[in-house]
Picture (cartoon, rainbow, N blue to C red):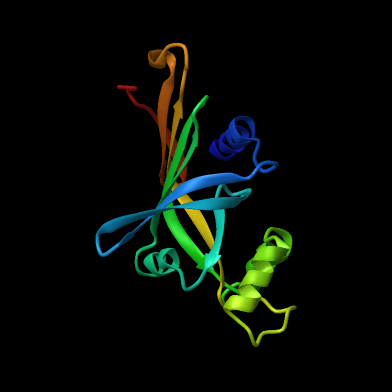
Length: 175
């Protein structure tokens, strides 16, 4: 139910996947948060979010040490979606099928060329460079803030928490 609801919100609020969707993504390193903007590439059938990045980036290294991750998606006219979860890091070395799927079907050619020329100059163009990584956020919690632009207090705020393989919903105050 939550997966279909999130898929519907991503489509109706952001026209995703037709339109690009940029998210604020937060990681933790040595107890300190770090936030950056990332392009959401996919929302999978199991409700995970997919981001693509370099395996030598700060975010990748943060997630190798501490897999806790959060993302925020905002549409000023309708609301905000936040997700908290664990990051699963995948590369051609540990999951060739997933890396190939995102390399071939989601990554624009200019990004492929960038990875191939800047990080793996001796690699054949048909290979996936080791610098290409897939970050899969496996959600543990979602929070949805629906905004009523006419009257803020007529909006709604709900938190969905995964407990024992079941999503529980809690209504939260707007204030």
